[in-house]
Structure formats: C-alpha cells, structure tokens
Length: 273
Image 1 (spheres, rainbow, N blue to C red):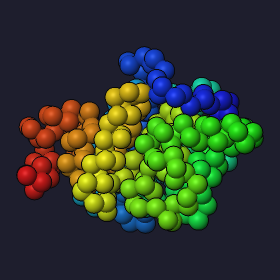
Image 2: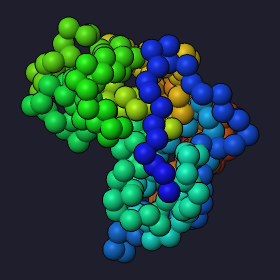
Image 3: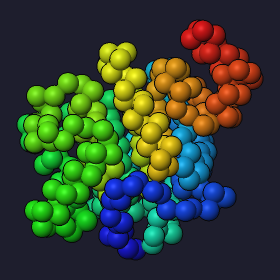
C-alpha cells in the first residue's frame, strides 16, 4: 500500500476537486471497551469532502475516544475504518503499528486541546513544522523553510515569530503552531480536539476565524470535538451527538440546535441556552 505520496502545500489553499458523493472518512460498527466500561458501542460515522463534522456530548460520552480512533492512536475491539487516500483500500484498523503511524503522519492532521501533546515545546516553532515536512522526504533546508512559511501563513501565525519555541508563546499562538504543523502536508482529514478550550474569549474568536477562513477558502475536511456548543454551532455543517458510547442523534447543525429530537440532545441544547 502506497502511503508515501503527499501533495505539496499550495499557497492559494485551493482544495482538490473531490466527488462530494464519496466520503473522505467512513467508520462502521466501531466498538471498544476499557475494562468494564463500554466507551464506544457500534458507532457509525461518515464525513464528506469539505465538511465540518461536529461531535458533542458530555464527559465520558465517547467523543474523545472516537477521535483517537480516527487518528489511529488507538485501535478498537472491532470496527472498520476507511479513508479516501491513494492506495488505501483496506480497513485501516488492520494495519500494523508502523503503517498506522506513517499513515497518520502523512494524511491526518490533528490539533490537540493540550499543545504539549502535539508539539515539542522547547524546539523552534518552524522546527516543529519542518519535522512533519521531513516525512514527505524533503531534506533541502530552503524548501523546508519555504513550505513552513506557507503553513504558518495559512494558520495566520506571525512569521516573525516562527523561530520562537512554543513554550514562549501564548496559548492561542501555540494552537496556531499546531494548526500549521497539521496543515503542512495537506492532510485528507483535519481533527480538532477541543481546540479553543482554555483560551480567552477573544483568542477563541481569532482561532475560530482562522478555521472558518480555511474552510471557506480551501475547503478542508474537518472533525471537531468540543463540549462548547457555541463553537460547534459556529463551525459545524453537521453534528453527531454521543451519549454513553452511542450516537443518539445526527443531523444538520441547524436542525440539531433548532429542533433537537432526542431528549438528551434537547437537554444539552437547553442547558447551553
């Protein structure tokens, strides 16, 4: 299976023209236990090109576990996972650990709630992005530098700070470094794990504006996990609601927030209101 090819980062951020009838991500019958706790129970997920899928639910609902499965950090007890990337025709959960790690590095970008999970905090910010670019086989310093600048520009990170280590940056700037690193190899899928949690309201707004611009100009396929329904309502095209490891409701964002059908979804929405 060829998981090495990765398109160059484009300054104009134009996305490839994909067939919107074919999903980028398909998960079927994903189940997993942690001891006696059923974290995921027969979960199905489909994400289409250019779509932002929001995942909501209270703590312990399974949303973060599901995101780790999408990022191939964890493997479920059972389930099938497909991504629309060149050469990947089998269940990704069946790949060995090395193949999963290479696929994740080349085709899936992620922004964690905690930047320490995604960045080497004492390395330069440009070095963090270059680390991901090296996976594509690029070794020329000038090319690494140029492509890192393009990724930083896409994440609206100030280029004069690109050599500063993340540990010296604010929380919002650290999230932008993570975003630049995630975008550097033009991933098929961008995963966002509570990307605005813990940030000041004004900084949250700036991070969301950057994500919305990317979605508008590129667009990029995203899965966004957040307990903040305001963030989900701002960003998501479609929403799935999870409770106790199950998807209890799924629909367009407007429908979920304006006319929720499941009692649990109603309680979430009304609590926010």
